[in-house]
Image 1 (cartoon, rainbow over the protein chains, first blue to last red):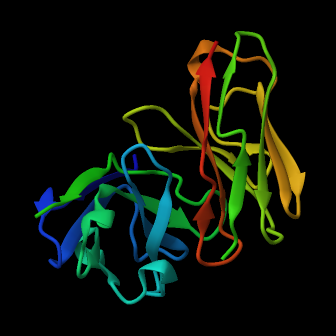
Image 2: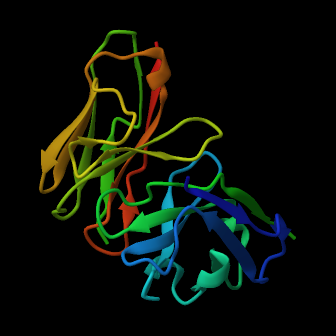
Amino acid sequence: QVTLKESGPGILQPSQTLSLTCTFSGFSLSTYGMGVGWIRQPSGKGLEWLANIWWDDDKYYNPSLKNRLTISKDTSNNQAFLKITNVDTADTATYYCARLHTTGIPFDYWGQGVMVTVSS
Amino acid sequence: EIVLTQSPTTMAASPGEKVTITCRASSSVSYMYWYQQKSGASPKPWIYETSKLASGVPDRFSGSGSGTSYSFTISSMETEDAATYYCHQWSSTPWTFGGGTKLELK
C-alpha cells in the first residue's frame, strides 16, 4: 500500500525559507524508475508542478520559481524534501507530494497535502 | 513552456447527459493525462496516456486526442462525477496542468 504524507510549518513570514517533508511508504526511492514530485495549489486555484527527484538523484525544477527551489531525498528514511527560499504571500498554497515513475501514470499516488500560509 | 488551455472552465450537466471537456496544448505533446479532484481532497489520476482509464475509473469515462488537441468525455453524467478535472502533460519540462474544468451537477 502506497502512502505519502506532507509536513510543513503551517505559517511563516515573508522572506523566510519554507521547508517541506514528504514521508512515504509502499515504495522506495532507490528503486529504478521511482520518483517523487511536489505540486502546489493556491486556494481555489489550479495545480502547479514545482519539482521532482528521481531514484538516481536526477532533479528537475520549474523555472518559474527560478533558483528558489531545492529538492532532495533521504532514501534510508523514505523521505523527500523541498525547500523554497525567500517566500512571499504568493507562495501561500496547499503543497502536495506525489509518487512518480518513469512509465505509466505520473503522480499516481498523492499525499493529503499540507497548507502553508505566508503572512507577516 | 507548454500551456494547456481547458474549456469550458465551468459547466453543469444533468444526470445522464454527455459531458465533453477539451484541452488544447500550445505545442504538441505525446500524451495527455487527466486528474479528478473533489473539494477538499487530493487529485486522483483518472485517465493516462490520453485514453487509458486509471484503476477503478468507470468505463463511462473516455479520453482521446493527439498532438495539441485532446478531449475528456463522460458518456452519461452521474452524481459522483461532479468534480474539477485537470489535464496534464509531462512530455516536456516544465510539466504543466490545465487550469481545470469545474463540473457541477445540474
